View (cartoon, one colour):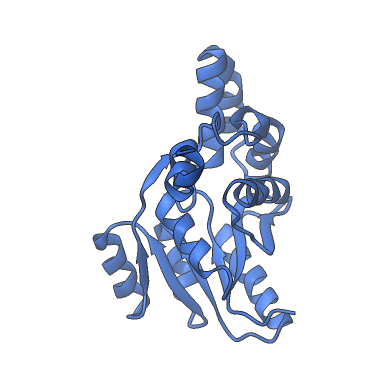
Length: 217
């Protein structure tokens, strides 16, 4: 049973600096050369649907080496990870992403393994789902209603997240600069918003910042 406030966290651009798809494509080019990415890029351009993209991500997720904090090409938002670590004992965390459920669960496991950041709920998109913001809102409201909660906070980073933040039952935590923060406040009409600076560093560097004692032995 949920006895703590729910905080839902976006993945792309919020916890990591780029989309998982872009990281996969860049890693493919880096490891195997430009030609290796041409066919996948053409395929994705022709069949640009959420199920097609998610299927590609799922099939190629291994290339971004989530099994090692030292070799992963991901760039992480260190400030956001620190913020979530500070609040996770007094809140229930959910990872909510437009990627498929498998990718969502793998990414959640990555943050738990290397940072001790625990997402009790993992909310990915299912086959045939397209309107990600509406899907996230519906799923998160389902969770809060299931446990008798009236509202939740959502952590995002883009104009696409504003449709969620406009909901009167959703509190605003945004990643970005002051200009974006003020834009969100103006559009949503909400004054009690929280701004987290987006400081993205390599996965190993981020880990070293949060756990410096492991690198000074």
